Length: 527
Image (cartoon, rainbow, N blue to C red; front, side):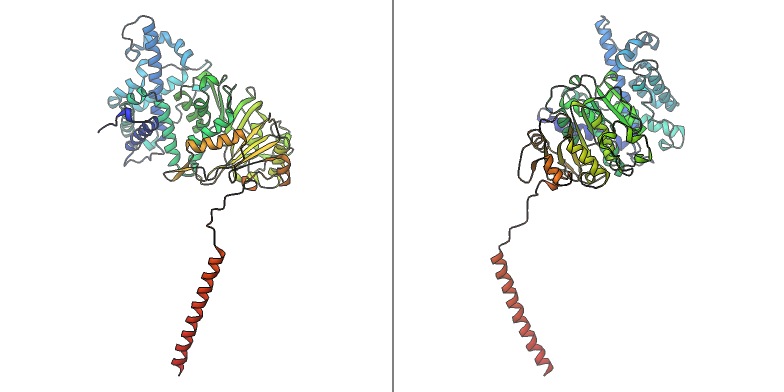
């Protein structure tokens, strides 16, 4: 196959080509098999992660040996007994330890001849996870490979069939040649992982949006939450999914400028494991992230770490929660200030109040919201009143439809701050700010920049944005729908009334003539 000239390819083109390569590899492995690409997601992602951490540890150890004066260092060929001497040092640096015999390349090279490959892999993964026990990285590594079940029936009805598929998987991932992409400065493993998660989300139907927020939306949220600062103390997402929202702060600020790291919580165990893997794959070290598993509303895990300078989230839309059936929640300092709880059938504002509570006085929260909470009455209207009258609402942005996986609804972004210099609220109608990509809509770089600059500058633009005061919103019964404040452009074709009346008169005249002729014909027939 003829490879394109790298000098003629842009970074985006290389990313696209790399994404196509990894997806083709994933789908070819299960072509004609019993397991679908979506079901195979955990295995492809797990194998890619296994290769990444193996190469990461190998690179580190080879550097150490080279610095010590050892010629041609090669951790992959070292004896396990010798590697054990550096175990604590490796765990301190990376958060886990991998024996040379258990490195991805060595297991993959032996895979076809290993009759107990499924057991070999299971023991290897367990060894990696348990290496962190009683160390600071224990919680970050524990259960990382839980989604990679080497004995699942979906891999094959017999051990031999499972091992054949596992061997093909390891060999395919081993043979992926990433050198030209790495030479171009791309974050190869991070890009592959993001693309796989995106494609699996796209092919997962309604469940796809549970673990992936489109990178363009994530980037917009991160830009808004950073608010042109050069650094923040720490970033947080209470419903972090696979971590795509949090990781966009790397692009906006750089990991070093997030001084105390990345914090997130995810209720789904499988997605929680994906998020931790995603952190490692994007070179966020174990001591710079804290991802926890559990129900954020009932059992928040980061009470000792709040407040946060930057909060972003795309929480689940209108999911049920305990609400007023739990009498303790109205006294919870996260929810009590509004004097009312979000409805039991719709937890959207519960997540919003939680994030506001944990936002620092200098911070910004950018939250994707289900549109109904912006205008519905009852408890949600009372919460909106609390947010507006206390001057926490900075901007409300109407997004285009069909951006997210699993739903075509047009969502909104609500931006919250505790340190607003005035009482103005900016409403932005970005419902037409998109380009088409496949069967989904997408925010382009130009779309993102226009929305962001309008938000930051609170710019007035006819049919696109409007800035109002708290009193204006109060006059609308605290309705926060963008359409209430931004008049849409009338794109209907202008009609010339005089010309239209003339056409109607002509039609009536011709109808009268036709009617007279019909009457004559009927009279002749009757005669």
